[in-house]
Amino acid sequence: MIVRDAAEFVTETLDSVIEYIDDWLIVDTGSVDDTPTVITNYFAARGLNGELVHRPWVGFAHNRTEALALCHGRADYAFMIDADDLVNGSLDL
Image (cartoon, rainbow, N blue to C red):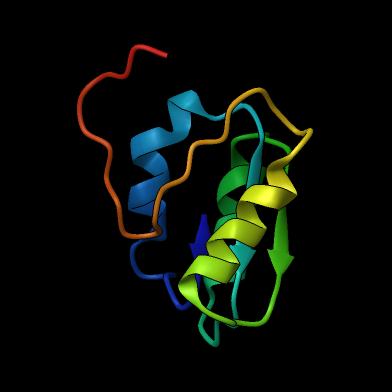
């Protein structure tokens, strides 16, 4: 996931996928709100290890590709969503 200034809604997004997360990597592209703190506190409260990476905004394609590249070797699958997405229902993973 790449995020910027998503503190207001990112926890709702994370709540919608938390049951599918074993490890997390989120790239913050220059938030000026509390997004980084909200994200790290969210996962710390649930005991999930992961990483928040700070990168400058270049463009959607570049930053999304960079986020995916940072996931390489961390897991068998990467679940790419946007900070304002909601996953409804049950996924058969």
